[in-house]
Length: 480
Ligand SMILES: NC(=O)c1ccc[n+]([C@@H]2O[C@H](COP(=O)([O-])OP(=O)(O)OC[C@H]3O[C@@H](n4cnc5c(N)ncnc54)[C@H](OP(=O)(O)O)[C@@H]3O)[C@@H](O)[C@H]2O)c1
Image 1 (cartoon, rainbow, N blue to C red):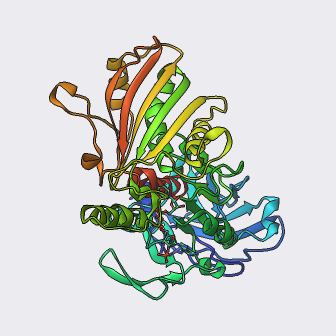
Image 2: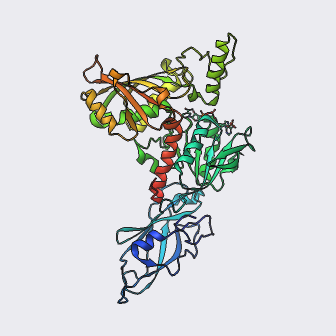
Image 3: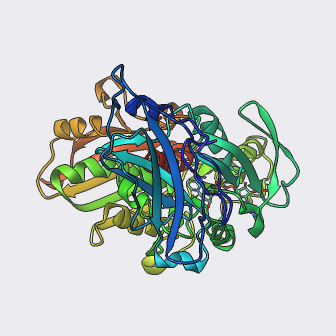
């Protein structure tokens, strides 16, 4: 049970039975009753519920210890959209009487009539300009039901590991995949779950969905999750460039995740690591141009990509044939200068993702970006050579310092001792690694460096979970 008042569905109201220790401790209040009742969900603009009742504690002289002058409640609707006016309260709060009845009025925006509103929850109570009531980490669940979609895939498997490791406060998990996987068992955080088939009805009851499926699956099913009232974090490419959909890297543009219409997209793996590295350089010296070449691991093409590399390599070593299913050419002992399909001007879809997604995330619609993406016979972790041109020169020393002080970047840059980031060292890590930092000899305002990151982690699962943590922090005050 979460420690805020929660209304699950029109007409039904949970009492405020969660952990209110923070409120009582802060105000030294002893609850007489704590309840939400009354008529709540009406299909009109004004929805009322109340009272929430508290008794103030008295000191030895029978005087109230704390006098509340003003009380404000903030709420949000669980369809993930912002609520304009939050709540006010009445009741004689300034009076020294001991028992207070507080009615909270929530004014809903007009769009709730569209039917996407499934409930309202009281997020914070603020009195005397202090936050009185918010969830306490470890004492509550911030998400009631989280669906992990694509749980059997390359990203999904890492997602499970990380969710168990990071212990996002979730009351109940569900795991979904295709009909091929439905009914199979899956181990998560020491328990056995049964995989469910993804259908449009599968999202009922979910307040958060984390999805890692092919684009067409994300296109078809995720609107149903939003309709069911869930916030969706999607790894696929389908929603990323839609104008109303935030495309988020928490270290770079966290604010974008907080104004959502339901779906939040996580960027392409090769884009994410590059943009994390670009951000501190841009903040310091304003980017003019970015040239990137990527060396992308086979795990970026899903589980089958890894199978292709392993089986293709074994077959070639044995002098036999192997029929590749993911790649158009043998990847064993080879490089393939094509990721995705060819689009305009001879660029591939992967290369154009790096251009357009970078501009969107950084809010720089005219940034000059040129990308070449290459598949390499490496199991995991994408590598990139990145050359930037900035408004003013950045020396390698300044760049090292900028990178080192940016969250989520680790500098490994000691060429004399042969130290630089490599996929074998970065796999299983959540950070973006940079090294080989040097001046661009062809351009006084240029800087070149090497960048490696685990595409299944920061390039996918870690980023999605960081977005979930961001939402939890914003909505519920959750801190890891
Ligand atoms: N791999 C990366 O480095 C990476 C990085 C960033 C983003 N992404 C994106 O993340 C998504 C997943 O990538 P991945 O590498 O994990 O792929 P993957 O290994 O091929 O896994 C695909 C997942 O989607 C599920 N799925 C496929 N068709 C489905 C359907 N009709 N209904 C329900 N579930 C279905 C699969 O379930 P079954 O097992 O039941 O088939 C599996 O769980 C893709 O959009 C990809 O572009 C990948």
